[in-house]
Amino acid sequence: MVAEPSSKIKELKIHLEALFNFASQVPYSQRHLLPVIQAGKALIGIKPKNPPKNLLKWLEGYVKEFSLGKENNCEENKHEKPEVIEIAKLGELINSNNKTEAFEYLNYLKQVANQEYIAEYLMELAAQKSPFQLLFCYYVFKTIRNMERDCQSSFIELSISCLMDVNENVNASQFEVICYHSQIINTTMIRMNSIAPLLNDLVNTAKVEILEDWHSFIPQELIVLIREKGEMGVWTYLSGLPMEELNSELILRLDAVRSAARYPTNKTDWFMNKIINIPMKTEC
Image (cartoon, rainbow, N blue to C red; front, top):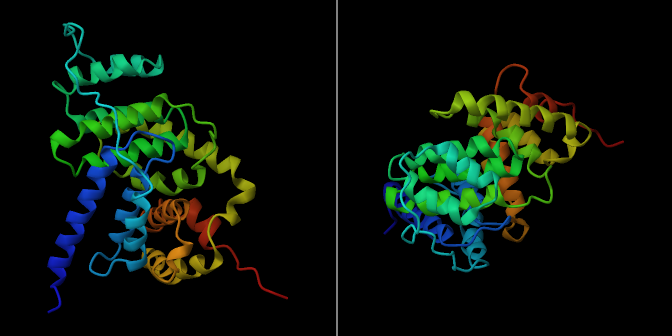
């Protein structure tokens, strides 16, 4: 007996929740699996009743590359509770690279502040650092919006660790942050008035720095499919790939392209004009 579509979607949701739960227990690193799982979820969401089977199978193997062992940062605070708890104090501890006290202060802060709001604040800090850190913190924000409150702290801690990390490639994720620009700007956030100008500066810098290489980010076949089908072109391209061609970098890139195709900014949209609407090269 074939399962009903609603039953399949429910099973898929449970499976993805298990992947996110696993990701919350993996120590932070620059190749942490959370962004890839969140990107995979978004790609699956293009057509959830018929998700790319190659992606589902690939994700199962991908998570096996990681091991649990996230340090426990939820221990009882060692210092006396401050009389005044301000979110800016968390930023000061992060910028001074004081991880132990930052995690301790987070335990105080989450007692008086919504953790989704804390995640927004960490995005604001990240937007002052690098595209990679901004996107990682955005993935955390997206994740905790769909998590139970008790499960949110581990993801917030991942953002804090990311913000304290020394990013060796400050130009990483420049194409991706351009693609995500419109989606982030159109996401309802309390701190958006503070985040938007920083994000705009980050994106404008990225556009200038990758100006000469914009043509190398996605294959011509995908460009054709997006012209014909928009966001569904990404689903078509991904579904047709052999599983051995899938990798974390490609999944992140395809999700960024999905976001750009789904959330165009305006008639002068950079992604559509620079990537999609350019004349095709013809073979002589």
